[in-house]
Amino acid sequence: MPDSPRPPDRPRFVLHDDRVPQPHHDLRLEEDGVLRSWALPKGPPTDPRQDRLAVAVDDHDLDHATYTDADKSIADDGWWELERRDERRFVFRLHGRHGATRLALIRTGGTQWLLHRVKDQGPDAG
Image 1 (cartoon, rainbow, N blue to C red):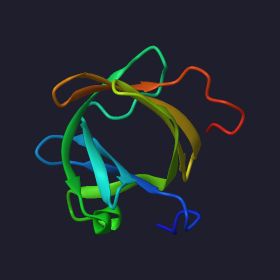
Image 2: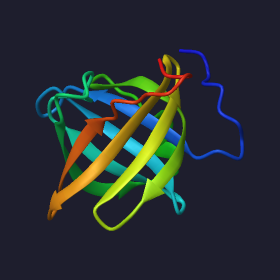
Image 3: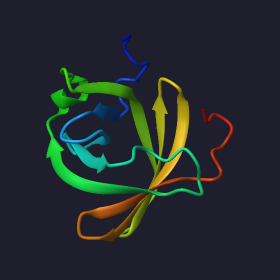
């Protein structure tokens, strides 16, 4: 897989396709020197009308952004930018191999969040 076009001053993201213990995706966003991580049991949303559960998991070291093995591959990667954040929600844009996607993570309690695909994707969305 070729390198993602990530400007060196932008925080990275990676979306892992993980097969263990059950098929799911892991979303990882670089922030404060670590990869903030969420398990996505049903993968990322493809439609703004269908939010997906995102379970916060332990932060990962930055070198995990390129990690793959027999059970884990990289579905997408690149860089991300924060659009806005408060205590309950943050909106961000992923700039990956397949274009840009606006998403929101909405805290619902404890480690549980909803991952929402924002309806207004903007002009550079993929």
